[in-house]
Image 1 (cartoon, one colour):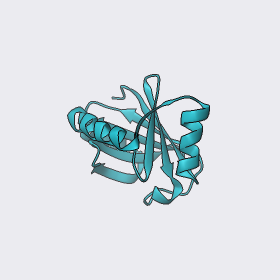
Image 2 (image 1 turned 90 degrees about the horizontal axis):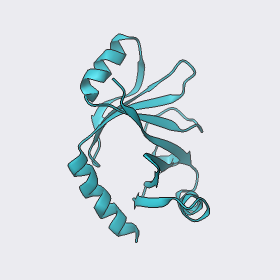
Image 3 (image 1 turned 30 degrees about the vertical axis):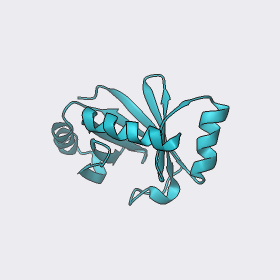
Length: 133
């Protein structure tokens, strides 16, 4: 069902300041930057930064969300829902090539499942990386 962790996203109060910390202080390579999201390469993971203002109907929290990469997000969604997972963001498509949904564990930590259209993702990533330079 779950292949690997794809991304850990931190919700930040100041996107520009947080981005500088991850790039300049930690030395992570910026993959792309958009007005509401910045992605950094960290080994085989993406570290994402998103503005608190962009949480879009996800409960208020300070802890990161963890995205799990799956082969078939529709199937995984149905299986998790059948097992009682409480979804807080229903299955939907993202403009960057992802199809995802968010749910919580027993303590309210946010977990996400995502399937990626890699061709679209790399095209969008290349455009975002060009913008940020």
